[in-house]
Image 1: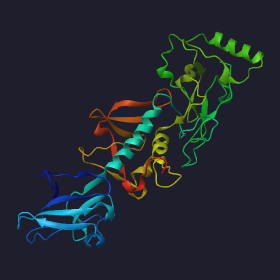
Image 2: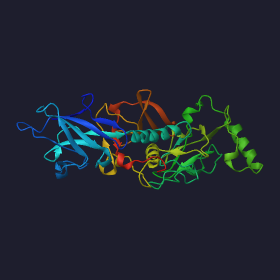
Image 3: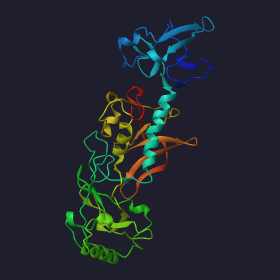
Image 4: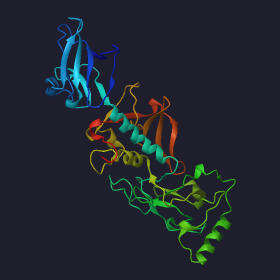
Amino acid sequence: MSNFFDAITGESITRLEVKQGAKFRLGLDGGGPPPKFEPLNVTTSPAKAPNPLLKAADPAVKLIKEDPKGSRKFVYEIDQANMQGSSVRACWNGSDYSAPVAVVSESMLEIRKSIVDMALGFVDDAHYLWGTAGNEPGVSNGNPGGGKHGAAQMRKYSLDPAATARDSVLAVCTAYCTIGGYSTCAGRSDRTGVGPATPPDLDAFLKSCNDAIAKGKTDQTTWTGAGIQKDLFPRKYYWQGVLQENGRVVWGESCDEVRHFDCVGLVNYCYAQHWYQPNFGLDIAAFRNENQGATQITDAKDLMDADILIKPGNGHIGMLYQDDGDWYVVQAVGTATGLTDDSEFKASAWDRFRMNDAYLVGEGS
């Protein structure tokens, strides 16, 4: 097999960062199979091999020289403005005969960083709720792709801790969603510092709510919460129609005016803001489909912001990002936890995919 190398350093490469729209040079070491070692066809075609298009001359590619003569070390100039796809390939007989070189412009790196920066910006405040894609309860401001723009709704308050019917169990300032089964938000209850051993005084809280109702204050979002910051509200919560934690009362944050995501809802929301056309929204399995625009990346050294991470079995999805030279995962984890950005990326735990540059644009473009 042949391989591409950096025309300046001579090092083998599978990715090259270039200035947007600029021409650049690549080296190619080797030819076709022995004994003829025929010159390979260097192309930027995105065609899936085998394909006769991979035999065709590419106007974006110009052979500069063979250095030294007879060495089968060729240098090519690539006109980025005329590239057919986002990578340079060396092909023989209509199929790849070298690992391709992914070409990334500086602007694309900025777009990919913008995608993960958007996700990171939600970590401190947003909640997790199964079936949602970024809307505040009762407001249709989530991602419209997939029809989930208004999936999170505010549940009517219930103040009876002994109630067992789904629609009347204890819940105050709690969002719910019916997509994929009835689920309610725990309001990041695991992060509030309130455990089963030291809960706030539920009776006192319920009395304050009933006192407010008696005074005509029936809007639950105006009630004073419990805890040191007076910002915690009790609920028994559901996940896909099943009551969780054996019906234990948990104390979570108010869901009012808070964006709600599930794992794929977070990825879809952030990518939709940078997608070339409206209404982007995929389920987890669809991100594995090359026809939807993503390609699996297996090179452990080829890491980029906004790479899409999928657990084997399609049970969970997140995104890769870099911080101070290390790589982490930003993800919507679960309703008792919310969103996190502190999980170290471990390649063995994820399948990794990258969206094609051609589908991405700057936010608001």
